Length: 418
Ligand code: CTP
View (cartoon, rainbow, N blue to C red):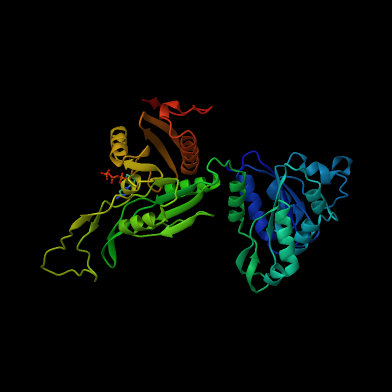
């Protein structure tokens, strides 16, 4: 789980976005975090402590004079074993308190009294004019200078009926930012280019040839790479997935478009991971108008021509990034995987037995390199993506060592064959 073992003090301040924080609490506990809720008096006007207590499973604190805490030291005790304080929603008034170090209620005092290892995040939520007010902007700059991470705000329709900057990020977006903030950063500063999803080769304006790739594996790798600190560009075929947060996505349809998009951004990339299921051929005689049934006449005859091999092209560049290929095989994975790695001339190729894993949330990966292959045990695609990213980070750091020299993780790491 993404926040397993993390202890988070969740501070609610006065704002209608408090209703979203009920959902955020569920997401954070679902991700493995222990959530200790602290509310300002104003926040209790928008959502009750009873609701927050039921969702977090812990006593909710509002008052700094609460005698339920030993020695009345809630402002000290509640953060001593915490990993972070997350203020959501963070009102205009509370942002001002953070900027000035005010201590006039339990939550503001907790923030000032937190030890240096406790990270502080704030998710502003306010009316557009309040956000744009020079005093608020000054406070926002000040808290960032003080090492407080602002999450958002976003632009959009507001509860007051106005539109603009000041909406709190959605609960899932806040969770994603927290997960990213806590993740190890083995690829800090690296630039990574990823292809994902299927391609779509038109036959006519309403028909085409595609494949069963859902894009889930490539998107999971893009997300894991961003969590690991990389700047990620994702060139994606048509999929039904939202762009992962913080990832630059370029949408394409055909293999030729995917090739052109990759070649336009590949310069300066340090890693290229080709996860897309690219069509090998396109229809050479695609029709510009919809093909009509012609009764009594023969069926249309499609002619094909070869698409460019994007991975092989990038791997052959004079200053090629570290290239990782993928191969979904329906049989003889070990034989085809190694042969494909050599044919594409890439240092690392990741194989899996498809198409049964297409569209699923789990997968089993086999890594092929010059010295043999190793199996990552079957698991959730996001967890496998993270393992793969850690593995790529290790290889970059060690200038691509052989599989056999990779230290075995504490748990198990599947079958190892040279
Ligand atoms: N690939 C690519 N461009 C292509 C075809 C494939 O970049 N035109 C990449 C895929 O993204 C993947 C790897 O090459 O990383 C292997 O793709 P795959 O379709 O399995 O390989 P092919 O070369 O098409 O081999 P075959 O279809 O014969 O198995």
